[in-house]
Image (cartoon, rainbow over all chains, first blue to last red; front, side, top):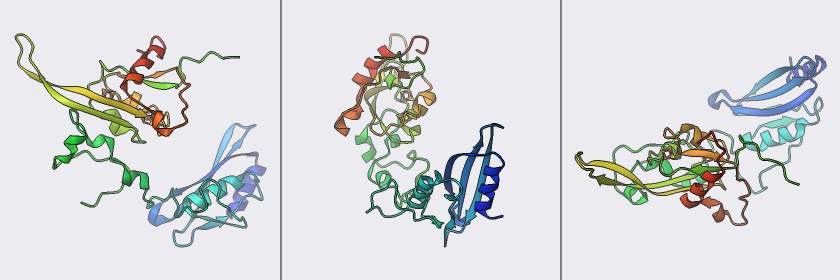
Length: 148
Length: 117
Ligand code: SF4
Ligand code: SF4
C-alpha cells in the first residue's frame, strides 16, 4: 500500500487528528518518515512509518490528506534533506544561507566543535588543569570521535 | 492580574553549594553543555584524624541561554544539591546576562518550594 493510501485509510478509520510528522536517520538503512495520528473517539494513536533510501531520499507528500502536515514536511525537508513528492518544501526554520541538514547523524554541529566540553574536567580541576595531558579523560556522549 | 505559580513548576535552577561536592556529574550529563564547574583539591587536617583531600568549588555557572529546562542535572545529582525554584522572570536582552553564577543560583534556594529541599 502506498504511503498516502496508508494515511488516508487511517484517517477514514477515525484517526482524524494529525499530530506530528518527523523522520529518523537510520544511517546506512536510509530514513524512516514517521507520522502520528490520533483517533479522538476511540482514544487510540496510529503510528505510521515509511522508508526511503539515503541515496535518493524522497517520499510522497501527505498534504492532500492532512493540510496541516505541510509545516512538518517542510521542517523534515530542511532538517533531514528528504524531498516530498508533490510538495514544494520551502525552508521553514533555517535561514536561506544555511548549508546541510542538521538532524542527519553525519552533520557536524559547529557549536560542539568550537566549545570545550565542560565535563572534561575531573572533580577538583579547573580549566587550567586541562592543559596537563592525561591519558584518560572523560569523553562526551553522542558526539563524533575527535581526531587525535 | 497574576496567577499563583504551582510548586512543581520549572522556574529556574537553584544550587545548594554546601551539598555540592564538585563531582561533575551534572556537567557531564547536561545535554546542552551549559553547566560550568571549576574546583580545586585541598587537604584538610582535623583533630585526631588523618589528613584527607576535599574538592573545593571555585565556580558553578549555568548558561540559561542554552539550558532547555530538561531537569537532567537535578535528577542526576547524587548529593541533592540542585533544585527547581519557582522564580521565573529571568529574561535578558544580552545572551551573556543569561549566564548565572553561583551567587544567583544560591539565592534561588529561597524560591524552592518547601518539602523539596
Ligand atoms: S536543565 Fe537540562 S539543559 Fe538545563 S542545565 Fe540542567 S541538564 Fe542542562
Ligand atoms: S551533580 Fe550535584 S554534587 Fe555533583 S557537581 Fe553537580 S551539583 Fe555538585
